[in-house]
Each structure stands twice: as C-alpha cells, then as structure tokens.
Image (tube, rainbow, N blue to C red):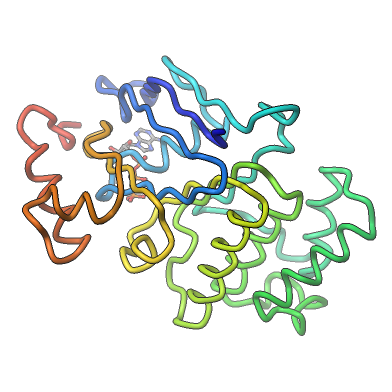
Length: 250
Ligand SMILES: Nc1ncnc2c1ncn2[C@@H]1O[C@H](COP(=O)(O)OP(=O)(O)OP(=O)(O)O)[C@@H](O)[C@H]1O
C-alpha cells in the first residue's frame, strides 16, 4: 500500500517560463521513509507543497493515504521548513489547538502529547510560551503538531536543520518508530546526508526540477561511480544530469 503517490507532477510559478518541477513521479509506501534530495533550488519544497495541497500543480497529482482515510486532511501531516507557531501560545496550548482541528478526544490527545513531549525532552517546556523556545525546540513542537493526529502520510521539509546530536537522535528514533508502528509513510527533504543514510529506506533525487534517481542510498552511491559518500554521489549524479537540463536557466 502507498501512503503517498505522486503522478507526473508539473508546477510552474506565476510568470516563470520554465516549470520549477516537471513530470515528477514517485511513491512512498506504508511504513517507508523516503528522502527527497537535491541541491538548493532543485525543486524539493515545490514538490512537497504540491503534495501537501498548498499549491496546485498544472499537471499531474498526488494521492495521499489509502483506504477510508484516502485524500482526507486526517491522512496528511505537513511540517514546512518555514513553519509558523503563534508565539504567544504555550507549547501545550499550541498542541491542543492543532489537535482540536482533528477532533481528537481529550484522553487520546493528552496521552499522545505526553508521550511526544517526553520523546523530545520537552516536558518541562509545556507551559512555556513558544516565543521563549530555541529554534530547535520550536522545530520539535512543529513536528509534534504535524503528527499529533497520527497521519498515514507525514511530509517534512528540512526537519532537522541546525539540530544538535541529541535532538537529531531523538528525532531520527521518533520517525523510525512512527513509520514502523503506525505503518505510515514519511517523505522528508534534507541536506543532512547522515540523517538520510541512517533512516531513509529509499531516496528520490531531483535535479533541475526532474527526477534523476529513485532507489536506495547504496544504489545511488554505486550508480555514481562507487562514491564513498552520499554527498559525493549527489554531486556526481547532478553533474551527469547537467547537459540539457539547465536547472539554473531562470
Ligand atoms: N515563489 C516563487 N516564485 C518563483 N520561483 C520560485 C518561487 N519559489 C521557488 N521558486 C523557484 O523554484 C525552483 C525550486 O525551488 P524550491 O524552493 O522548490 O527548491 P528546493 O529544492 O526546495 O531548494 P532548497 O534546498 O534551497 O530549499 C527554484 O528555481 C526557485 O528559485
């Protein structure tokens, strides 16, 4: 079963001659974590926002979830890289507010919130105002708000930017557990290749708005001249895809 299926998706920003992403297709299976990779400007955020329904592709579509929850907002969790949390609410208030949009009952919500605050070592911050938190703490709260309703598909744009080693480990463990225990599909964009190698079952590499690889990280390295690291593989694959792609021809 698929948590996310992207079918021939093309998106062009208003007034732009070239589409930012073109004919992108891939899927994220239930229980699978997929990394969306690519250099700055490759089109990752555009793809994620189209999948999340924040922008309407000019061609193609994304299907979210399966079974009874298919296509409903309950089946999707999205945490953008430029997430916004109202600064004058407390951590608990903002989680409760988000959960109220999904009609969770109070017992369910309290159990989930307590477990997640504990997983991210934020229990002592529950009554603090958002404005008093560090960026890393806010990012974890944003993740909690994106996942509190237990979506089948979780989409995360750069979820671990600027994280220290402890926060990175907490979040990696949380995502691995979430995908496994709930059978959810997670799609995340990241420039953190260590994270991608550790937790992603597959990677999708886009370059100049087009898919240039879909497979495992180790196959990506093998296919890119037996690269030692994922960074090296990315550089090589992107260079190979350069002629005619003109990803920077804006
Ligand atoms: N609002 C916009 N209007 C016009 N062009 C845009 C807009 N937002 C993004 N783009 C262009 O679309 C292309 C893809 O951008 P996108 O933000 O999806 O890339 P990205 O892979 O997420 O990059 P990064 O790793 O830097 O976050 C880029 O060429 C970018 O300049």
